Length: 163
Length: 163
DNA sequence: ACGGATGACTTGAAGGTTGAAGTAACGGAC
DNA sequence: GTCCGTTACTTCAACCTTCAAGTCATCCGT
Image (cartoon, rainbow over all chains, first blue to last red; front, side, top):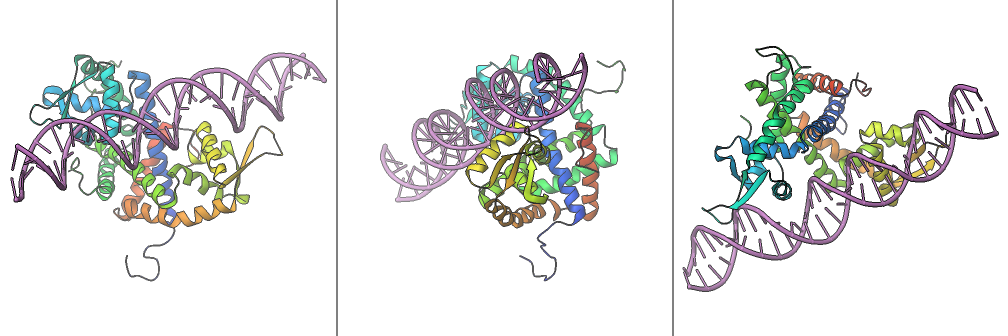
């Protein structure tokens, strides 16, 4: 892409980049699995399912279109559709067609679903705090925000979840 | 659980923590899936499989015990066993018992496996650079290393991959 | 040596995820 | 009003991961 001769797009990472990369990959793998484990043990749902329920719980009317919900939960529509089906069977969520546009499907949080999120939230927050924020200084929290946003925006420039 | 009245283990995250958390979760999900997509398209293997092959390729004799390999690749032994079976069928890797201790199984990278890693590496590095290091300043790279290490060490204090 | 404990790996069932193909509902052009 | 393209969702098959046994080898105490 660029024109330099020497090391513009070098084949390998510099030593400090290599270290950083190893640490980041380790973080990706371990954090995700730690969150999932805690959620399953504590509330019987996956972290993704928690994200779905949580997004619904924060919405006016506890209702959202599946496609919007998929964006909020950062998953594919297919994945969400399966998850909603399972959660519907468990009585946490209800589906019904959007009266305004029959192509959309609305998902609504049931009372049982609401209760589950409310019960699961404190444990989740506690875990996030314990694993992520307790070990970091306030300065690092700020740094993390900038770093994560930059990378996310590079992966998906159209992302609108971030400022 | 706790006894303080004010904010010892507060139920919710502070606004800046909330932002940071959203950005981090977004990073987890998107980066992992971006890496996987690139690897599948480019080399026909998953990012995890690449990690396995890559670890073997960097070892003296291109050979490692499965249990050590699982640690290097940060996956369960069960997952690794399945992956090795698949890669063995594709001729990328070979299994044989450890002559020193029959409980161990050694995995050896074949020439075909070596060729595949060598072919896949540049694209992988390019993608990592594009998504992670290009958008960050050198200062941020250093910050990221510290931050990621702190969190990983909190999740798993026994981790020996990091300094 | 013998037997139990431990360690290393494998396997099988259950369940989740993906990608592609299918269905259904709209919206605009003619 | 009827096509056609688009959008939103669902479903299916292939695949992967996990968890919980199960197997086999070695070590250790006696």
